[in-house]
Image 1 (cartoon, rainbow, N blue to C red):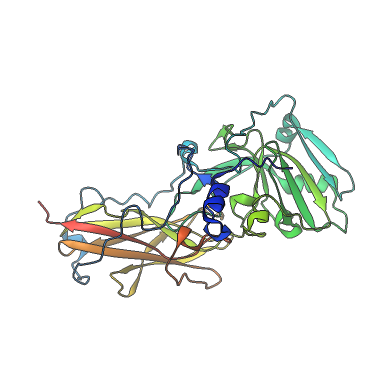
Image 2: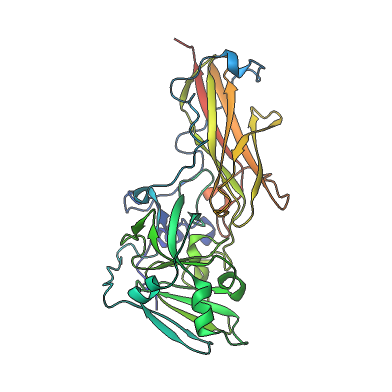
Length: 374
């Protein structure tokens, strides 16, 4: 049974008496362990827009804001391992696995159960690509998301060795910290499921799951355990730790876009070019367009940098240049459209911006404050 030590999500369930207000068991790597309640727009306080409507000042004719006038999101951005969020249902139990004795077993409804050492896993043909990892409770505009290079073994190689039986419908995961979850068969038998042992060219760190973790395209991190020790194929749906507390049983990634620069309340200079820039993701679906809205006006197209052809699971970067016409407060919104034609349409309200229980696709907004150009 999973360790029942109260976690960040559990703490908030306890103090609110409602799973709807449950916070995530996710936090940036360098965040303090104390539970905190995040309400979008509460830190800092949102600004009531007071600026005049947008003008048509040509970007080429204006100087660049000293802090936010430089375009940087036109080059691929990788998340540093030290800045990748940590998802953990029990922060008091971080396994330090001995690679020499660790084993990984695939069994259950298979024809030929297999157990592998780390050496045996690494002896299989390696695969490396860039892909996003995101927490299901990442709030609107949140940082519980990262884009890294992952290296490991494609799970299809393991499947070819064990052979699934016809009555298998789900895969159940076991981790060294006691965490368990499951997915329907189509998620683990799809292409590009990765058993990862490296991130950004280095072995997995202890907090990020050494020696092995799984990455399944299209799913939030809730479904991709670290410190993986066993995958059991079963003929029923197993309800894991977070699922039993009301979080999604599927945990499929929703389409979203994030403004990374500037952030709420950042100061800019009037009469200068400000470059709004950020990222957009849609799980396995490609991002087709990103649009920016200024002061509730028309949606205007941003420029996008699509992921590399061999990394369809990486995030899409985008940017939008705008001349700040006069001193005042300006509100900017961003939305994305994916390859299915789905477009973000609604604005976040409440705790986590609607992330509970399925993740959020609400529109991200920031307000910046313009002052005289000195």
